[in-house]
View 1 (tube, protein in one colour):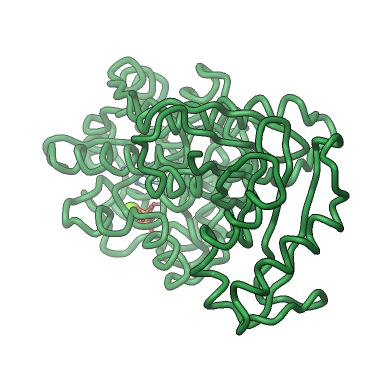
View 2: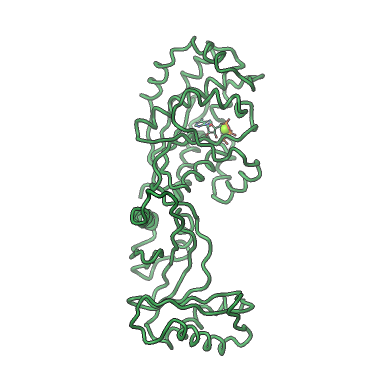
Length: 391
Ligand code: ATP
Ligand code: MG
């Protein structure tokens, strides 16, 4: 019988979010993510999702890896099935869990029956399989209180399954169970991580990138699309919105005092992001800002930046140390792409002495030199859409 994967459901925190909707979302996300690997039967029973391959040519290492990136799964295990017979179960446990049994300092068996017609109780079955395992691995003692390894036996409708201790899943909530937000995706290290973190809270994301051709190159754009593509492993399919930003930056350069360049540029980013959000039914704006990291990330500067948007600005990295962000970026697999050396629009026309404690009234006064609404509309009309994660 084929190996299967068991995925345990994570938290369901919002009161309004009912379990059925949460499960449906999770099941459809799993089906979408596993589609490239082959055909599966995916069912949910008692807070556990059973992923059963329909053919035996499927690479289960890859599938298990992909499952580890699906939000809403708190823990997961690979399991193997056999007929519902105590000797078949014991023989399978001895064969399938040999490496784990040999490595463990102690073990116990835990059984669950969803098929109540099985002729033994859970306790009897655990004792029987435990006894057989003990005989096969005399160097691994039983410890029912604090075992190093727990051998799980599950007797289900069609078959029985055995597996070792589950490993942690991706956690969080299924993407799409908690609304939509736009996420400002630069080519840097931080914003892919902030995108990942908000996706983990069940939010579907629309990445937005501000692109200043020819000051930033075609490769810089390709890099951001590549980052979005990498993030689809966690976020599911997305459409990245590439906003032409050159005219706005040139206008700011020509008409505003240099010390305000970055701030005014960031206010334009917020206005356009909010327009994209409202157009798509999104309810928040995600950024990779981090307190004190650069001049535009002081509390004063962030207040001025977000003053133009009514939607909540979500900054999941606000209190992180750079090392923590880098560690996360490596773990989710975006770091190596983020450090490719292409320029970002923030590095075009960077002021030599940026204001770190700007006053809103001063910024609003210098912005009067610009046709704000026209510029925002022009950028919005020029957006290019790139779908990522299609299959
Ligand atoms: P990152 O590593 O994400 O680029 P950063 O530390 O370089 O962050 P800033 O350049 O000040 O910080 O940008 C702060 C945030 O603004 C970014 O995390 C990102 O969310 C957004 N942002 C910056 N530049 C762009 C851009 N060209 N397109 C879209 N969003 C951007
Ligand atoms: Mg940046």
